[in-house]
Length: 455
Image 1 (cartoon, rainbow, N blue to C red):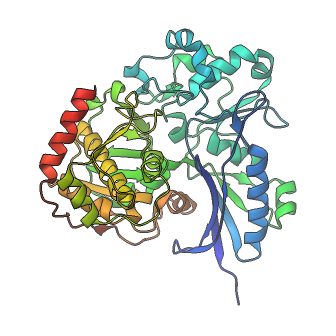
Image 2 (image 1 turned 60 degrees about the vertical axis):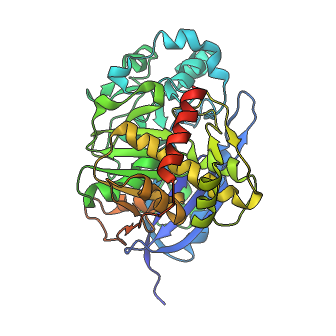
């Protein structure tokens, strides 16, 4: 039986990494996953890049026994970057949840660019990539100076696979403080850190970066002419197919560890840096108004180990009882990150999934209102597989149509780079009928009033 030509996507999320092979119809041929573990140090908490390298190399070798890999695409989370010389990393890639860089908060805040230039708010821990680099330059000046290239995370893996260094706009423009989206140039901070000379030339995410290093081709059994694309930031990978297919304005709710609302065609003037609102830069170079919170992490916290699927009957019971979850259940981001999350009212353990779903729907509604979202809302990623979530969101947003994406997600979106701008027709998103929960509007008013009192 003839083996099918495939695109292999290396998808590195905050909590897990996946290698997924797709055929020309965006169908999965092979996949594997591993936990993305943080190393405690030394010299500081960092990504276990050696483990990820081993997983990628082994995965490509195993996948090559099943399908003929013609193209490799990398997509990763943001707030991660690598300083490399000709041999490899000169410093480990910092975990963005580590608070160490905050030791230099005042010095950093005095040098980061104005929000009007960067559209990058001041974020907790190391979520501003510039903050990580500022700290590294101060603590490890010799290693920092020895780096030949500064690479954002997807492009680090592209360089590891091919030996070719490049930069790409979706990762550089992702709340890094290093980029000015409207001017399309490095920020004053990047210049002041000496990074501008270390940032390789910009290339489009869908361009071919190069072919495999001979050592990797030999170790994996892949052909030496396998092409590696430049790569893309994960939320922008999810957005990519919709950019080509969706009428503007519209909003993509990209849901994973982070829930990010990307309002394509939205007004940047509505962005509020105090509410974790920012501009991401799409693969085509346009700035996109965004809002976000750590929704996947908060959802898991509210579950407290419960695994039963949520249902509308339990959501309706919670609304009727007045039981509510008030933010925030992660201090890492969102408009209410400084508040301590709490549950008000009675809660049976079996209703935790319904409460987590209702809470995340209310938080998303809050973000969408702040963005003044017009047009359709497409739920993509983890929450799209929970039918209760888009149904509740659709009831909360009667002026918008809400859809659940089918089999798009980060990995499948990144796979589109293999043929871009030709886009393989995928399964269209499914419209979500609004739920009909009695008194949901009154419950939302009470939830918002409780938030105002907490603030």
